Length: 398
Image (cartoon, rainbow, N blue to C red; front, top):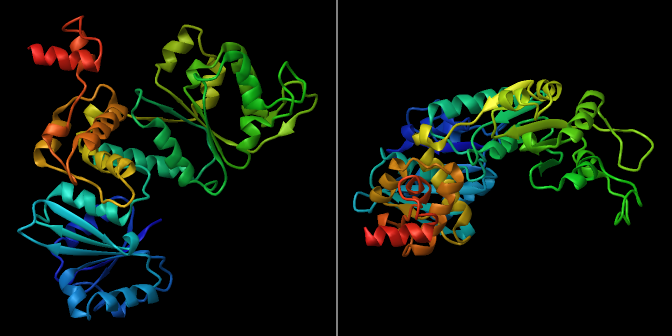
C-alpha cells in the first residue's frame, strides 16, 4: 500500500489532496502546522514505508532549497518528491519533471479544481491499478478488497469494456497470492478443440502436433490466481471437466493417466445474463453455482460519470511518451468526455483518448482533438452509417 507524506505548510491544496488520497486507501502522513507532528523533521518514520513527499515551493525555500529537500528525502528513503506551486497565472496545471521523474514540479491555478487534484493524485500514486471517483465504484472496490483476502471463487459480471479484468487484477493485487502468478485466459478466443489442452495441459504425443508436453494454464497459475475471462463462451463439453477441477483441485492433462494437484484461486467473468444462459441450457447450473460464490458487478461508464476523469488520466498516462507528463485536458475537452454516453465503455474512452494524443499539440488536449465515434448510436438513425469513417463523412454532409 502506498504511503504519502504531505507537508501542509503554505500548501493550500493540502486538505483537498489528503481527502482524495485517504478516500482511495492511501496512508497519509501529515506534517507541518496543524498536524500532530510540528514539522517534517519531527516525523518519526519508523514503521512507515512512505515513498512520496508532497510539499509547497515555499516550504522548499524555507528549508534551504532543492538540494536540501532532496538530501532530506534521500535520508528518509523517499523515492519521489512533488513540489506544488499555487500560481494564479498558470493556465490550469503545469507539470515539469526533474531527475528522471524523481522530482515533479506542479503549478496549479485553482486548488479546488477536481481534475487538477486527480492529476496530482496520479503523480503521487501512478501504480494504482483501479481508477475511480464515483461513490458506488468506491463501494465496489471496498467490497472487492474484503473478498480479496479470502480464497473464495469470485464471479464478475458486467458489460463489455466496463473493467471486469481490471477488477480481477485488483482482487489479485490485494490478495495473499499477490506475489504469485496472475494468469488470464479468454475462453472465447481459444478454439474449442484446443481449450482443454490449454487449460489442463497435455502430454507429449497426446494429439497431432503435440511434440512436447505442456503443463497448461491451471498449473501455470499454481499458488496464484487464474482468471477465466468470458467463461460463458466455454463449450458445454468442457464445463463438466472444469467443474471437476474446481471441486477436486486436481487436473488431468490430455493424454495423461494421473491427476495432478493444483492450488489456484479462480476468478471468472462474463458479459452475459448468466441466469438466462443457464435457463437456455447453454451453461451448466452446477458450474454456475460453483463459480458464483461471491458475485461482483461492474457498471456501464455512463452510469458512473465521476469515474471518467480519473480513468482518462490513467489512460493518458499509459499512452503518453515516457519522458512527458500527462497531457492536460481543457475544460471544453472534459465537457465532451463527461457528456458522451460511452456505449463502448472504457474501451471506447481509451480509443478516443488515443486519437486525441495523436491530434493534440504540445501537452494540451482541447475539444478539437476529441473525436468521438458516434457511429454506434447513428446506425439506428441512419442505416448507411456503419463505420467511424462513414460517420465523419456523414457529419460533413449534414
